[in-house]
Image 1 (cartoon, rainbow over the protein chains, first blue to last red):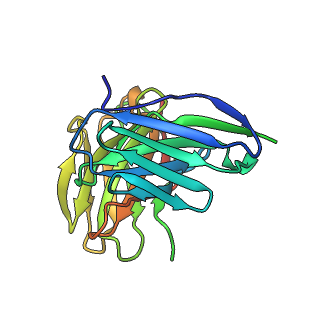
Image 2: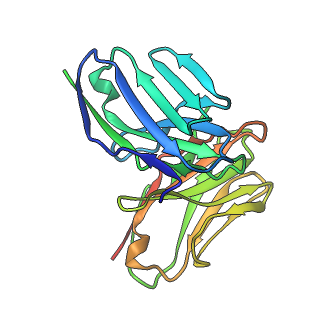
Length: 110
Length: 112
C-alpha cells in the first residue's frame, strides 16, 4: 500500500463548477501538506501549503487537512478551463523529502 | 525574483553512459532537493542537499548521486544509465525556515 493515495481521475467538470480533490495517507509522521498543479511538460507549481489541521483559503482555492482521519482536500471554486492540469498532493515529515500522490488529472470543459 | 532553473532541458543518452544535470535554486534558498518523475512511479524523492551536505536520501541505487556547491547550485549525476532511468528530473529549492519547496521546469532525460 502506498503512503499517499490519490484518485488519478481523469475528472471532467463544466466551467464554473466546484472541484473537490482528495488524498488519504497512512504515515502519521506527515506534518506538512501541499498541493501542486502541474501542466503538461512543466514542473509542479505550488498552490497551497498547510501545516495544521483545518482550512486555508487563497482566492478560489481552499485546502483542508484532517489529521485525525489522515485526509486532505483541495477545493477549487468557479473552475476555469485554465485550471485543467494534474493536481498533486504532497506531504512531508519535515525532512524536505516530499511524498507525492499519483496526481489527479482535471479537465474543465468550457 | 528568478525561479529555479535547470539545465539542460532535454537530453538523450544511450545505455551505459553517464549524465550530469544542473540546478540553480531561487536566490537565497540553500536547500535543494531532487526528484524523479515517471508515468509508472510518479514523483519520487532522490536526495536533498543543504550547505553542500546531503541530508536526506531516497530509495534509489548508488548510480544516482549529487552534490551542492558553495553558491547552493546543485548537480545530479546518474552513472551507467539504464532504459528505466528515462524520466523527468525535477529540482526544488526551499528556504531553511520553511518546508515549502519550489520546483524548476525539469530536465527530460531519454535513455535509448
